[in-house]
Image (cartoon, rainbow, N blue to C red; front, side):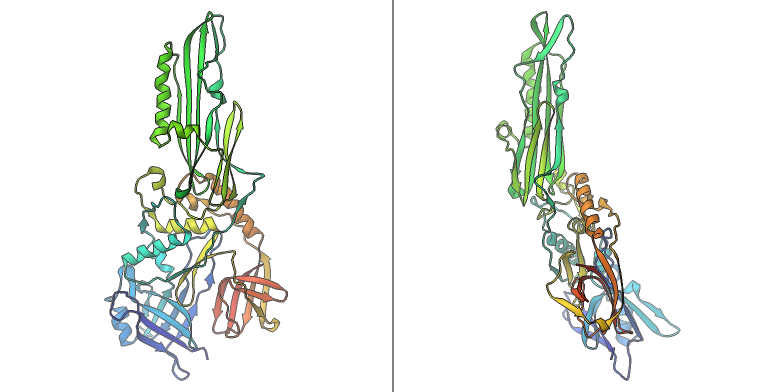
Length: 492
């Protein structure tokens, strides 16, 4: 029949008639109230586009008295031209779209008396309220679903609107093999051991108070989801004049690497080389300054003398290596993906600092190669791109109108999206970029037109079988005029 119904629902959550149908436009076989209607495709985001275009429905109708009063008057709106009223749209009694009305996207042709609505799914609210910020200050970080939920919560505080959401996301695995661990910090100290050139009067050697090797290792803060790598070294050079020890130079180096988001360091350092000191008692003061540098960060001498050689946290293991007299390294292997993300610069400054919600969401989606989309009842769904339901819809050969096959898109992602994460994300850029390029580069995709909308219940990420191959849907458009699905899908 291809008959449509548009219900206008009270969407203002503090209204007495919240969630009630207040007006309807209903097609019948005799009278069509919907002059025209088109639906944009449902899409998973591409590798680099994490702004996420909302799904749209455009329909034309003649303005009724109710529409004139409650939509066109402008008296029933939240801030930013968001109508109090939402829409549920049905085709032949089947609900296929739930969304919001943005009144600035309504146009009225006075000559023909035709009103054109463009309605959006609720992902549109994420861009409309892209300026909202949040103070991300939980020490251990945020589960991915929390990042979406806090954004939604902040929008709800701005306007009384319901934004249902569903998380189908699970933390994926991106392994750094134990045999080839990633170097996440390196401290060189060979320059500290360089001796001055001897002269006829003066000769130089290491003083007995020098440390034979540096102190280096880890403190694991499991409840805080944080790993700290520490390096400390003291070298004292003694100058001997005509066989008498007469001058001293102390060289001190301290490094503190606080790792957030697995391998993103925030680095504090201390470097000092004294001038020549002729009273050995004066060497105590610069050494105390090194100890004070660590103590300021809560690291005592006892902590420094009991550093661990490594440890495990959140499915990752940390280790160390040492090229004696030259450098030490901190290494990492295991699952690169943490279960929680630490967002914003407040972790680095230890002060309350707000972060843009949209940037936090985009970073989370890129980092985990995740996506958001809406379902027919209007929920925002958070899901993994590479995760699909077990059931498979078998498409009859006679219903495949056309089909073409091509390689996946190997576009280079904009890794700057990750810079909102706490810590230095440079190393993370490299690993995530390689993973994303490999993920998309290994994909074969299809463009297929499938006949008979009512025969198949298709949705984003569901699996279809055409001949002997199985595919996962990444883009879906319903052509109600021709009774066809237009589908893009990845071969599994």
